[in-house]
Length: 98
Image (tube, rainbow, N blue to C red; front, side, top):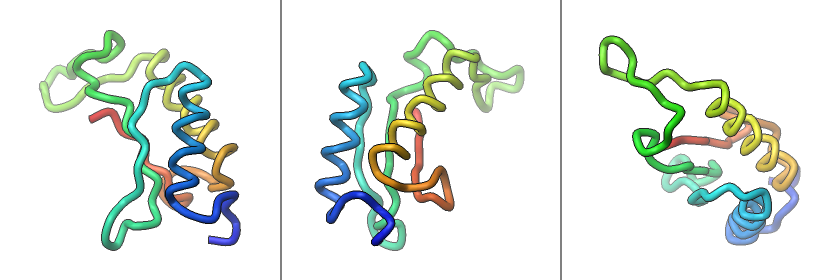
């Protein structure tokens, strides 16, 4: 974990929470457990409660509007800058809206 900017998960979680709050983004931030212990999890909340998402025709998913995609990009950028991680999945950042 030497490429990261924080010495512990606790410090990293606090820094990301603060950076997101400073940007006006409400999110839950945590780290994975078990084999995913190194992953940074950022949860933006229930997608059904946000205005931008529309159900797909089949009803088994949602179509994200450009506004939702922009929020995702902004959160990822903030997380990358704050932590030193390099991105989603292989960069061990998981952004969800659950």
